[in-house]
Image (cartoon, rainbow, N blue to C red; front, side, top):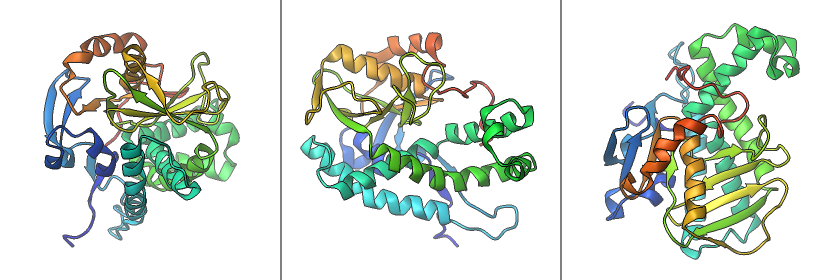
Length: 295
C-alpha cells in the first residue's frame, strides 16, 4: 500500500532538476507565488504535486494508477534525452529521441492544473450550447460530459492527458524545432512549462497556423516550436538579454500561480509587475482566470 504512487507531480522532477539552485544535488528550487507575491525556496519534491491528481477509481475504491505509471515511464524515457540536449546544447539527432521528447512535451502541455481547468471549461461550453466543443462532440459524448461531477471531470481529464497528450506529441514532432540559447541572462519556468501563444490572433491551438509553442529546457536553453517556420534552421540560436527577457515574459504570462528559477527573482521583478496588464495573452482562446481549478 505504501508503494502506491499517490503523490503525483504535474511538473515532473526529471524536468525541474535543471532549474535547481546550486548545489544541484540538493534538489532545491526558488519559487514565487504570483497570487500572494511570496517568494520561497524549497525542495522540488514539494512543488507542482498533489495526491491522486491522475488516480482513477477514487469514487469506487478500485484504484488505478495507470495514468501516473504511463507518465512515469515517459519521464524515465525522456531523462537521457533531456540530459543530452542540455549537455550538448543541440537538438536530438535521432528520430526516436525526438519522438520521445515530443511525447513528453505533448503530455506536459495537458497534465497541469491549468489543463484540468480547461477541461472543466469544455463542460461549460457544452452546457451553454454555444461553444466550439459542443458543436464537434457527438451527442452521446456531450450528454456524458454534462452528467459528470467534479470527480468525474477529474477522471475524464486524467484519461485525456494520455490520449490528447500523445496525439499532440505526434503533431509537435513534425513542427520546426528551434533551440534558443541565452547568451546573457537566464530562463525561468513555471507550473505550466509548455505553453502556446499566437502573436496576433485571439483564438489558437498548438496546430494553428502562426502559433508558437514554447518550452524552457534549462536556465540556458529554450525550445521554440513553430507550425510555419519563421526562424532560419541552425543548430542553436543565441539570444541576447533583451530577447531572453521577452521569452521570460511569455513564461510569466503563461503561469497560473507559480514560477520557478535556479536563482531568486530580484532580476525579473519588473516582469512580475507587468504581468497583470497582459495576463490573458498566453492562455489560449478558452482561458478564463479566476474561476478556480477544483484541485
